[in-house]
Image (spheres, helix red, strand yellow):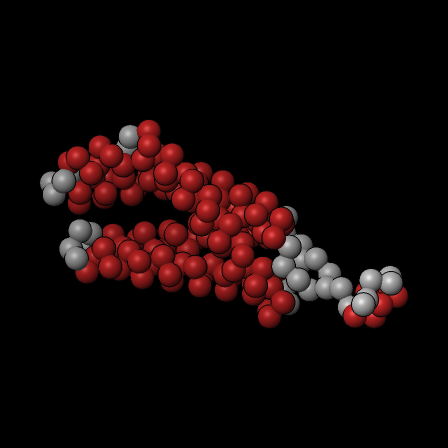
Length: 157
């Protein structure tokens, strides 16, 4: 089986859209208050930049690109695990760990507490499980073309 780039992009955009919606919901319910509490005393202008129109557009675009990246990881893992649930879980865990480590750097320099990072990491892995699962319902591998099929079609040199 070969990875279909078109299908990765399409399913990644769906996964990114779902992840955007989930991040907005979790932000409004819980994370925005933690973010404001941690950032506003240090740099109020940064918080204004995050909530501005360009900041929101960047958030949406980056999350959509991450959705495509998540689905590429899923597509790469699918042949290895050979079942959709195992590939979804492993892709969510792999990409969640990368994002968690990225946030860990932020914790090490003291902007956020480790509690905040652990909450964000847990919610992120949950979001990724849901969004990658939704994207996996759209993504299907393209069948690999065998040498015999190429030969019989008269496409061989």
